[in-house]
Length: 379
Image 1 (spheres, helix red, strand yellow):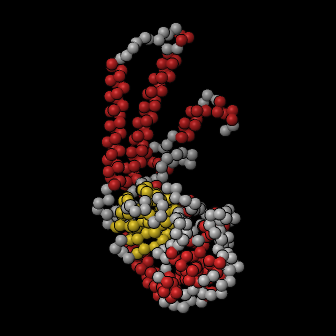
Image 2 (cartoon, rainbow, N blue to C red):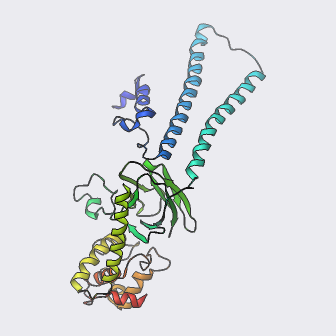
């Protein structure tokens, strides 16, 4: 539209039509120009959408009645037609009406809203519980009673974020380890945080709840349709807030059981790998992957950091000096700074690999290799 378009008498009506949501019964088939919630994938999300549309149409009806009566009065009883304003001080009938009618409207809205809110908080009867812990800036998932635990981090490359390569269709929405849950199963998510306030939000599940340090919040989802469902952290949590997506794979029960077995086998393989002696070349290769996933967001892929915010690792004496000091910093973090403790987050192999990498990458030439056994000793 040009600037003059907005001066046309029909421009306001056109903008209103563009903002109208689609019908509640088929909102998954909305045209590209329409605005509304994402298609529901769970009964709770469907109930939330139904409540949303109910309140919306109540508001539309109120707006039509109020503005319609106002515009009719302005037109019908205008001064140019000789209308004379009525003179009265008060009207008990009008005052009672404008008190009772809004009260009845609010009650009519509060009853279904309360019913929906109570259902959203009801996690009873859950068949699976997953602890979700927010970190700056990724998620950790622990499957209670299943002996499965992993971190889930963004896989979008720095080159893609900087626009140096073509961006994928799911830009900033893909992770290395997605959450996997079975179909037709009520899953309870227990939300908390390791550092600052985050928020776990999957729109198609009708799930959004803060993850707060020292507290545990609960939400639930029961999804019948297999597929990939995506979400984001919905609470401003620092520099990397935009880079901690949520990816949930909903699969049939048989696939879910097979996935659990695979996760346990991977954990056993990692434990076995920690008992081996690694070459410096292998440690550098794995260390680069660990660094790009966990460290590059702050210290940059080239190790130059962000001046005044995150220190450079390239050429740093703290990195290339005493190896025990380097291991301690990576494992235990730096109190009072944004540097977290990676000891609880990474296994022995990944810790050994990333310390080896930062001591020998770029122009750092420590020339040594930290072994998983060294990390075990430091623990």
